[in-house]
Image (cartoon, rainbow, N blue to C red; front, side, top):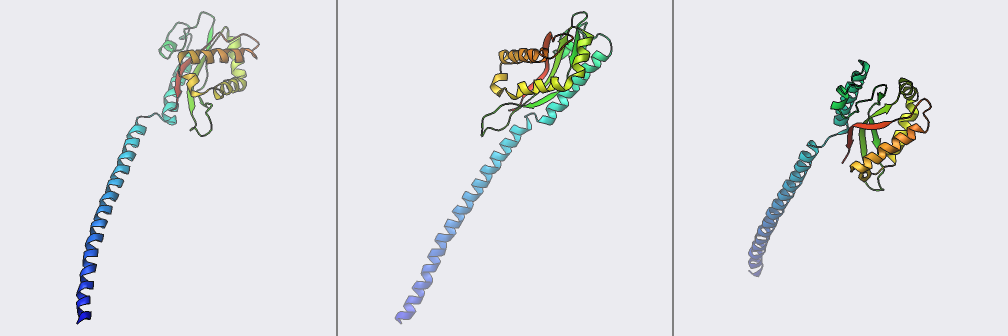
Length: 199
């Protein structure tokens, strides 16, 4: 009989153990659900944040259109010289005889420290030069012109371009770099008609 008495006790113990494991399973399921909801919330918030951030293609599309519009203004007479189309995009109103050379958009990497995500700048640059001869020389030497500008941007940290003072210093560096190899005339002014730094 003592063996029969042990059997009901043994049968009772697993039942109480299954209640504990059932409660533990329920708690773990709830924790798992909360974790999944938390991760889903973080992903959703990041998606909303990224949705409002400009991408490279957005910047290229916007900046390139401005560059084409400015180039179109130069192709039809002296619209820039009279302060027409160029002023709307930040390009200068050239003095009589001066020329404005619009360069294609630049998308260049900036200097970052090791372990930091890469950062880049997108910029459209206009150069004010004294004559059509200097404008033609810049067009002829476009490869070294672009190379000099890219090298200068590659040496800059994102913080260097956050302030107006930093951007003005970069404009002066670009002017000096280009004037070092131009023969027919010197660049009088450098203008950013579109400027953006990635986050």
